[in-house]
Image (cartoon, rainbow over all chains, first blue to last red; front, side):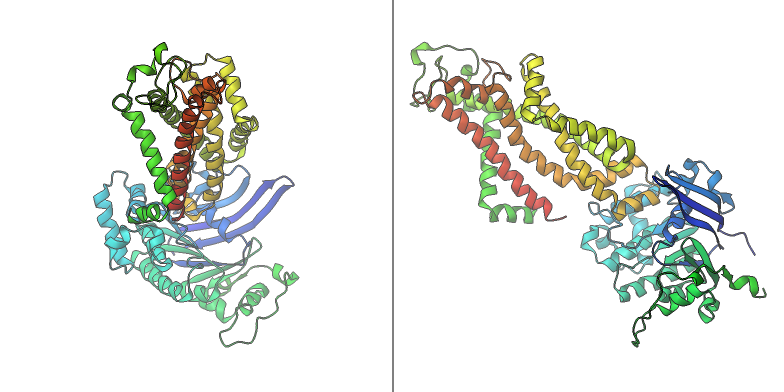
Length: 292
Length: 277
């Protein structure tokens, strides 16, 4: 087994507020191998997005955040790095895709200018013309045929699906080793979402990019991820290869989550308890038990 | 551009605004060629023709020392415009920067900057300007200073409110994630999104700055004679109403034309720039 691209060990996060410390993450562990696609699944407020922000080094600079535990990126501990060194990784070695592609692009600049800004992160001296050519090449990779029109357009002139592709192209433009996708395409139609996911999957395979895929959509996760982690209220409750977890969900919360998905064939939305003492059951690790 | 003209053409009022502002700007810039008596902007005395009602060659009449009112109004426009431009050129960058920093950085920066802004906003604008002028010498430069001091907080508040909203937008987070510096996020990402509102307000304010400056000089706190100023011209003629009506009516109308023109254009700009948001 090679060294993991991202290795989170016993990560705790709490926020200091007026009423004292509020613990958000109660010691989570997670690892992603180079080129591996890993999903982090949970309901809103379970700690998915803050985990992503810690990996990106965005929460470390927040005065009210208390972080303990280790986050190793490519073998280097992010907590021991200076904020300048963490800053250098952002946008080059790691990158991110967001929920709503249209609002993630600045409405007052053309796509070409925003591409230029992205490419300048890796190479500050890149000229506008060179950036334009490079952007056109990357856009071709995300199946955008009339790249010139897209590059000269403003984000509000493009469709949501088109903007999503532009976002993916931008996120991969600097060949990051790790891509964090925070519920990508949740704001899009299901058909467009499916298309862009397929595209993203093909691209990360081609570029051998490791992906941390944050989602609450189990259907999407099943199609996209090699392994998955289920998080509930700041604790990992189940982890393992996607197929194994879907074939045999053992933690009560994972089962409830899967039962909650409405079926195309009808049958109503199942009743799920707001909270259950069962959900606090310890972590189920499919890999620990499986012979390897 | 075509849409801009379409909106302008569809709204005759904004076209009127454009004509009025063009009139004001052209007479200010080419005052030396338009004014029939260029020398009358200064300390000229012609008692043979003093206090004449409108008649050729004095189409707006003459003032109490025999100077052509039309010439003086044209030169007063020049001073009003320069004052408006200088005041906005200083107040807008200050207010916008303070608003951006307070809105984006938050915390203590926000607290200090916005409370300072509130202190300025809590004093009625004209009272603030008057008290500053009361302490300083009444000159054109100090007039600009006084109006600037009361003007920047409005921009700070406007931009602060926009920034608060824009800060939560996805593109700001996206820029932070990709490693953009604070300066880049504030001035290259958020500021361009504030510009439509700022430009609209600047156009509207051009008229109001002229009005406030005129109010100050009406009270004797602005530009001093013999320099022509619309406000002090109205003040000088006020005691001779209603017999010598031209002394106040024409300078008053001149103020109206400038303020009205800039307001109409500001409204049109709001439609043009706002539609994209």
